[in-house]
Length: 315
Length: 121
Ligand SMILES: [Cu+2]
Image (cartoon, rainbow over all chains, first blue to last red; front, side, top):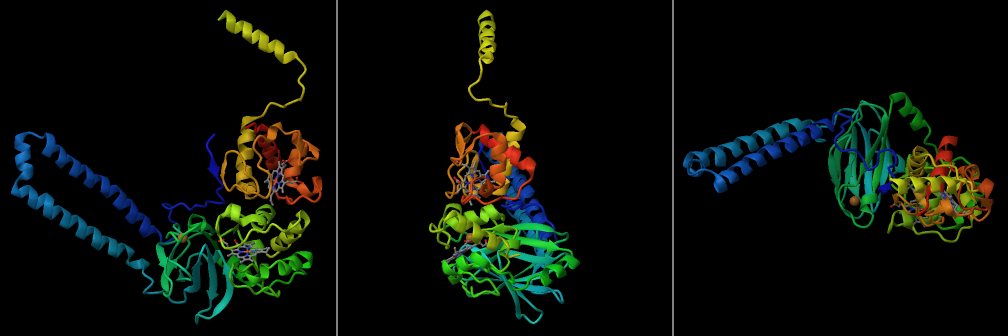
């Protein structure tokens, strides 16, 4: 029996299946390079074969001045210059130097080993804080301002755009866009230590009407938290996590105001249901070793149920 | 050939002896679907499970060899219908358990029970 790993709705993400105008050129370029490589390799191997096994006449011709000029100089110059010019033309539309008028802006900050997501208005003022999941409307470019809090990470949602490093002390800009509603998975693409391989991301693309509905639903927590909220506040969770509308104001971990409505837990890696929620809270270290949330060995079964029910209710 | 026939006959006769535990023949398709459902629902967040490489959670007991265990959670007889009810809503079946009710379809629960009962290693 082959062992399998959990694959929650297409994570890790597909890389050669573009779903928007900022990923199509990247995929085309990748295919051309992938196809060109073997052709060049075949030519080199052919030349090698002639050099080792060919008839004296072929060997002389391969070593002749004409062959050197054509194969050694003209051919690589033409191919490489052609590729460079074509590649630059193809990908010039991806540049975030010219941001389309009125593009939505979101700041995404890489952390070891998850992501802060800060939505902004047209003037660059922060409107909403969330984590690990980005919601966008379809059919329009979204400008991401990418930063890093600790070490270098790389933002990559292969179906929606290129790959861009997140560097401490810098802001890098990247455009993404989705053609159709759906869920698009991402993955940190720069080794950042420890559980880097378990640092996933989710983009949810909505129709404009659904996106407006989603925006309207991002209110501070209203619910009477009951025993679950009391446990959250008394167990130290609030030192690291914010739940807007409650006294929990911690900043070291992801904002949990809407954690119950996320598609995933643990930064894109687990499906989100009461089971995975309880499993994560009790022992996230078994799931994502060395992540920065401690394992909790102090809860009884009933307490874990109450805490889980509260977190799941944070829609 | 003759030896083979004799062995087949012996096996048939053996099958007539009353079985100590009645075991419904496992439907391989249900077993495979059950493993996929357990993987998709993230049961691994709390259990190490054979055939699921990651995650291997530690909140609940490892489930290898579960098909041979006499009891579910030390309380209920380990039979398919009870097991399907337990994996859907553990607190209702074993009060005080840390395993929460996990929303799933009835068919998924039945498949997961078939898979769990097939685990013999
Ligand atoms: Cu990383």
